[in-house]
Image (cartoon, rainbow, N blue to C red; front, side, top):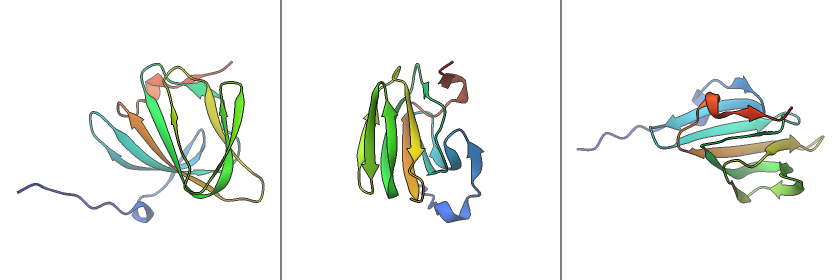
Length: 115
């Protein structure tokens, strides 16, 4: 029989992170999934080895991707290739919650900030 673990994001205490308040929901050697409540504008960064997928669960905000600014709203999904400068930004007065999926699994050592 396969062991399955049910995870409820509301039972995981959020931690401060460059984008806001992050709940680490799941990780294996190949993938990580986190829930992020974006609280402002993150520092622009990139990853050498990881690609990310953002899925907007609630609200709306902005994604700074390279030299573009893309408005995101509930239901939007966007893939961020590795080695691409990016950051999320909350729109003042709006809630902005994003599901973040990384492949391979999230590694803080692969977080490179823009000077």
